[in-house]
Picture (cartoon, rainbow, N blue to C red):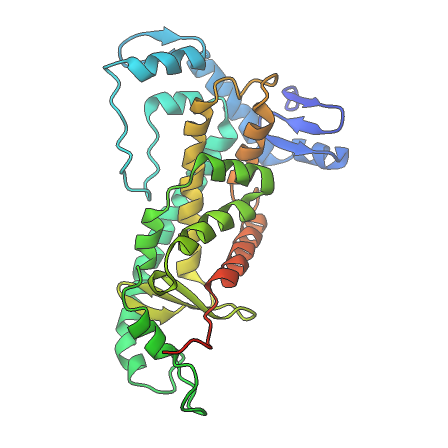
Amino acid sequence: MLGKKCKKSVSEFICENCDYVTSVKQHYEKHLSTDKHKRLVNASESASKSVNHLFHCHCGNTYRHDSSYYRHNKTCKSVKKIDSNNDDSNVTIAKEEYIKLLSNPELIYKMFEQNMEIINLNKELQTTIVNMSKQTGSQNNNTNSNNITNNSNNKTAFNLNVYLNETCKDAMNLSEFVETVVPTFEELERTGREGHDKGVSSIISTRLRDLEKELRPIHCTDGKREIFYVKENNIWNKEADEKPLLIYAIKKIAQKNIKNILHWRDAHPGCTQSDSNKNDLYLKILMNAMSGGTQEETEKNIEKIIRSITKYTQIDKAISL
């Protein structure tokens, strides 16, 4: 019963409830026995019973198809537009969009999980910034500090302290940089085609490259050891080994990419239908926009993105100050 909505194609095993695709039958059968699959099947059945596949507008009209509902929704005066400037740390979905999402319980579940992660990351980030600010005074007066250090063996050596605090004094804070990032449909589609890590890496790298080096909030001094200096709260600090600031930025930007799925779907009517030429891309977007099906996959994707950041934030120590 749990697999009744799952079908087999010529070369792939597909679970429509979970948007899961594999070419290995053993992996497919293993997926059917997971708690996650069972939970989503039950959620899908409950959602189907509760809404009866109807779409309700605030004005009282009811529609059986989401395409008809969407056309009406664009001109209905009683529908209050969503403020696009809502705080990105609180993923708010309009009632109409939520009803449409019920047909994709996996997407609901993943967005809820990642929204909770962003909330927790915001709290951790605030604590990290406060602690780093308290330490800055003593670190700046300690020439042996692990913070911004100088090479004392050569008077003409690159001076990181001067470069960051003078050359890059007008750089953006990392949180300000994140707020400026607005992923495009093209970037969402690239995420679907090439995978989560490459998609998010491309979004971040494009925005950083658009900035002059002196205005970027991130600089890498050692790509192999992944040593970064990040500006936040108007202060340059060496990023902790756990990379809390970078991980916060990566997840926040990935969350923005996920929120774009609803708008992309509305811009491509019929993409949820299997006979649509956009259906294959839509399914890939659903799978790859998320950071991974397990915690291990999520961590691996973040590691890949951080490694990619080293490539385009590396400081050229041969520059003259």
